[in-house]
Length: 437
Image 1 (cartoon, rainbow, N blue to C red):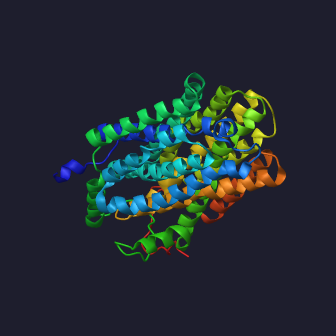
Image 2 (cartoon, rainbow, N blue to C red; image 1 turned 135 degrees about the horizontal axis):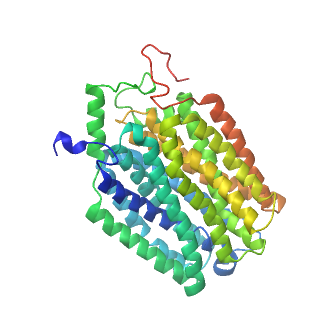
Image 3 (cartoon, one colour; image 1 turned 180 degrees about the vertical axis):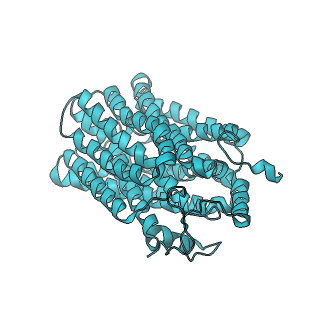
């Protein structure tokens, strides 16, 4: 390829952006097929004892721990073998999942299938995100992340609803088998035939930055080598840079909400006499509002900056979670889910965009992988915390309060330690003090 082949921009690379959006929607389908049917029917189909909140949350704990590690691996691995290969391997790992759920004689098989799902999601979702950031412009990052997460989480919501209907028509196990195999096989074919590797774009961008730095210089961490080790990047993301720490802890805590929606929200709704399809639609409102709003909220941050959308998103999402247990009825639960989904839409693409703003292209893949490590570890920590809260009190409502309070506290930490990362609104000034601690 010549130098002109690496032109960046959504419009300039619209065909590959479209293929990557299809990929991330299929990734959303893969996780969405477990969102409604599996937890709601854990007792009747998979032999889980009624009221076993910690055991019910165990499959989310396993998913979060594995996905977190695979995000970390995927980021670094993709800088060595390319984005496409990592995406392909992620889909290969997913092949046994629908069969395991279909066969599962007990809950342990569901946990084992979810471990493989964590590997799949860590490899595939990371690559769809990183690949689009490779081929789009810096001023399009918010929109790029919004499009990515819109496609993925609308996919999650659609799959949750479709599999609820499939379970009623074909039975839970057969419905998930047919849906799951169709998704994985289609994704593998599309990956092999149409997806391009975008690592050359990242390398070309790094070379261009070195030759001619951009006019609005991002506030990159100071005192970091051009090719830092994995340990150096991990330290920067986790504690050395206060801004990246603030973003990482917010990412971790916001996943408490997703763990709650996945593990306990359908169960809570069914115990309140909602039908399986009603639960699918109510949980789907959260996913649809989250996914759909990101078409607006990602682009919004390109115009107003990342800081306030992220902070307000944490607080609004926490308020929506608290609202669920403050009222009753399908309409109230749907509105509450919508409020939580809108708050998530404000923060979700823009936390990732903030990481991309202040990490150089040479090691941006690793930085995003480590951010996603901390973010998805929130599945495991959050599921354990909400499972304990529900088990100790004997009521699912306690889990909602645990998550809501965690979101408010984490948003306060982000407000205190974070800062604006968009280079146009807060550019680096030569001689400015380092932003590390």
